[in-house]
Image 1 (cartoon, rainbow, N blue to C red):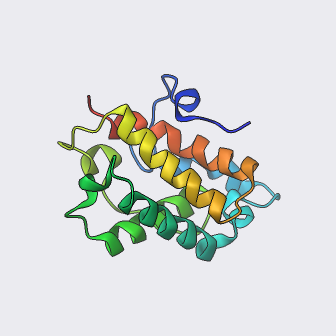
Image 2 (cartoon, rainbow, N blue to C red; image 1 turned 135 degrees about the vertical axis):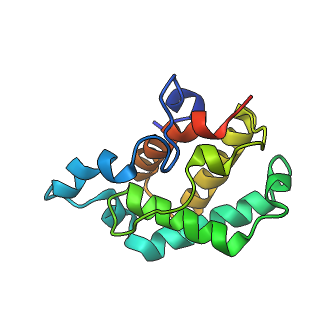
Length: 152
């Protein structure tokens, strides 16, 4: 079963990639496990970088949301997203950027905008042959960020 954003965003306290909860704290138990981390299962930083790069290409072609990124430093955005996903999935990275609330302040994003970005991410994961179970695990990590991104 593929999670949809609506199924993931029940009043979850979406804590952005960084948000009010630290990703390191969220994944401390995973890091102590002997089983491979989600980071490792996804293929490490190289594979995450490819998925994020392709997601950004999808966003650029997505007329629903590409206008939000018109003045964005895309290489910096990609680096920040890779770092967030790397840390959030149990990798060795440490995100030090803005919280999701700070990064999206004043953008007036709505749920449809957030959903469009998630769809672009899913499209990227599909084209990079990320198994559905791993996709769902990553989306479950990212979904709690919605309240800090969406400000209707």
